[in-house]
Amino acid sequence: MSFQVTVLPAKLQFTVAANETILQAALRQGIDFPYRCQQGVCTSCVCKLRAGTVDYAPPSPVTELDLQQGFVYCCLAYAKSNLELHHPFIHG
Image (cartoon, rainbow, N blue to C red; front, side):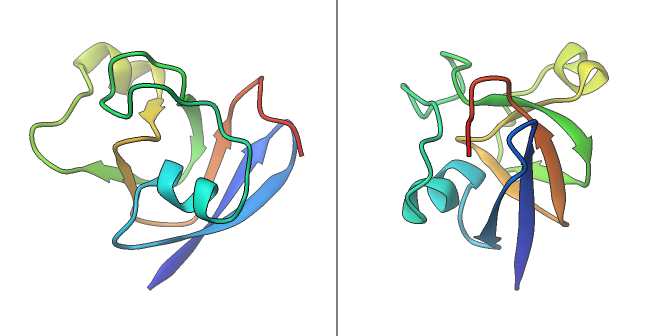
């Protein structure tokens, strides 16, 4: 099973498989997605969730504040539905 990810404001779209993180899917498809540590620490890949559902393998890197603000750590997040994300530095 795979899901469609749309990154705003660039309106960039790509597909993510159930067994890969959002970042892995973007890089696999040649998308210039910002990242550094791939451990949920540097926050380069963090997007705002506009629509959809994500999940994390335990232990989850997200805090209660992250959840309230809709932050998605794309290096560790798995799509559970089609997603609409916002990242100001991703361009199509």
